[in-house]
Image (cartoon, rainbow, N blue to C red; front, top):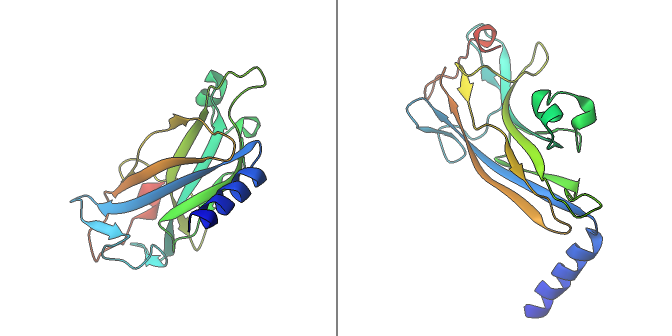
Amino acid sequence: MRTLWLVVFLLASGCAEGEGIVEVYWQLEDENLRRIYPQGDSADTCEFTSASGTRYDLRVRLSIIENTQACADDPSNGDCQVIEPELFPCTRARGTADPVPISADADGDDPGYLMFVEAVIDPSDGPAFVPNAECLTGPGPRVRKVRPGRITDLEVVQFIVSAVTIDDYALDLDACR
């Protein structure tokens, strides 16, 4: 068994020279902190019905940007993106961004990256969007370093869906925009 782990480690570190992995887990709860997903009322976060009858998915997006003041001021600036934002399927409670360039500069300074984990409402009749805080809340961005061949674990992110209750996921999508 020890040999197997050594082989796995060597393969993973050899293939990831100069790159790392960022991993995140999430859970969604209603405003009373009752679990919606995972291990909650819903088997996934796909195909909910809004108050207007529109079908929507609740998904999670990971964005990794340069950790500079200019990028913090305008995180939507494409020049700040380290990788293309990852929008994870509604059937999952964790996601992985792979590969992610290491965060250290050529001179060895490592400011880390600014990482955003956001809930996204993906309606069937229009573009996906990040809901406002009255509808759904989550944590703010965090700074994390990415090292070669290593996993940067963002741990469990908790989202509170304030506009729903267990068994009633009829969000008012217009009010959430």
